[in-house]
Length: 341
Image 1 (tube, rainbow, N blue to C red):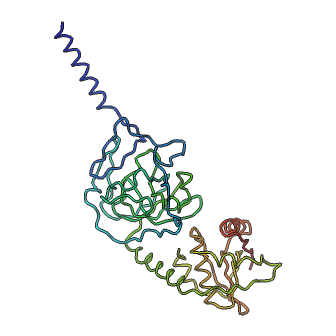
Image 2 (image 1 turned 180 degrees about the vertical axis):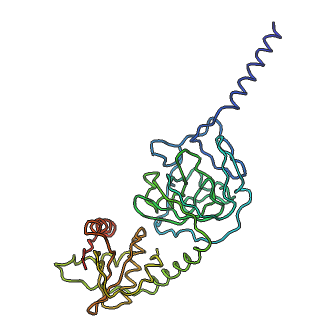
Image 3 (image 1 turned 90 degrees about the vertical axis):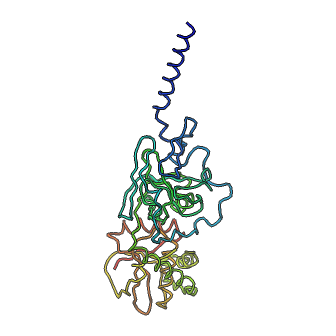
């Protein structure tokens, strides 16, 4: 009897062990693998905090004393780097296999962007580097490590450039995990998540990005104080040019900076300012692009009657122009003037 009881106990224990080994870990568990194969968490692993809609994981969050200049942290500067061998090998998490890219390839996809913060701050990433929540980095399941990507917030048009140096997120529906600083600059750190577009940056684009940064930095350093010339008070609020000119800056898109001087063009525009000197108009255009990092529309310079006017557009109609004017008003606290040519 005693022997039989012992045999039954051994069979029961073996069955329990097999059941435990075959169980599937909770899909939202925190995983940050630094090797070839991601380690599956145990039963005590914490799921993401669902109350924040995918914001960050339980017990995670922003640091207690974040830097005061988070919005001024520069984007990652893309450059060609040797790929980490181990970090780009196939791996498995929660029973799903991931096969990272072995080279830099074109990639563009939309999905949910989340972020991770203090819980992982200082821990080793998949690249072997320590994670810095205040650096412009990201975790992606398959993009090469290291590589660079442009991440855009679909809701507000803001975009940042990040360096991919970690793996994740391993949660259904999420596309990328940004550092806290990157999510802050995109405007969704408090919300926790947002719909984003992720686009890989290829080597041929890197010199253009570097040149644009140098051009913007030199323009800001050399720019004298603008000389705003206001049209009549009835045509435009008197404080319009002054408020924008005082604002601080990142870089105007290269294509917009190289736009030729336009003598005339037909359409609906938003007038942002008028200057007596071309150089001041150019400098002011740079400042506007720096203040409105999400702005992709062209700011053209129209020369007429000895004045250089900055016009944004053209737009299809007054309604579209009014919508853009409202966004600019919310960001810069002044109302652009709608003009029809």
